[in-house]
Figure 1 (cartoon, one colour):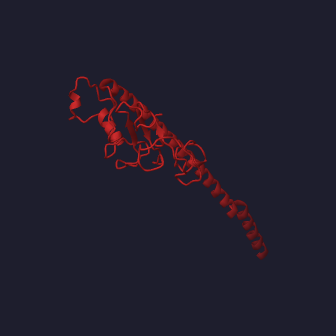
Figure 2 (cartoon, rainbow, N blue to C red):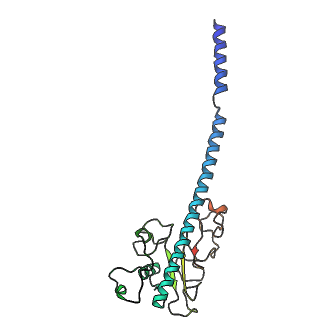
Figure 3 (cartoon, rainbow, N blue to C red):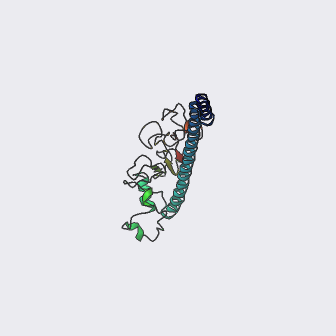
Length: 221
């Protein structure tokens, strides 16, 4: 009887070993799941980044059309004293603005949703963090004096510049918008702003894009 009991225990032990997972097997499964999750996260961040860049380019194209219509009617570009806040007010002024009574004015040229405007009246870009965000906004500067030798704008010297500072919220080599040629350009500062070891402004799908932080700007030039 004792011999049979021992044999039964051996059989049961062997069955458990054959049907159960070992620690190594569990670790391998966990590692595979982790790798798949990382790949999925990277793909999601890249897809989200591409969608936001596309949205920014599309919005800039809408602004360009509206600015063209405004200039045809008024003979000049919208003011830029307060950047995109001035642009927004010119394209879609408040109801009490006297320009609505001007028979030669055919606006509004573009209407804006509340979620597209921050508390300061500036136009928010797709990377904004809410209506208090003053960093992720569109920058606007126009040639208001008709002299392309004066600055800004720095790029479209005879018309206007519009750009978003992208996901990183940085551009140029300092913190002041529109005070140098580098502002708004792609990869002009050649600085690894996010510290990931890659200057990835020009390659949104490159090795530096995994963390979702790119030093890229979206502009109209």
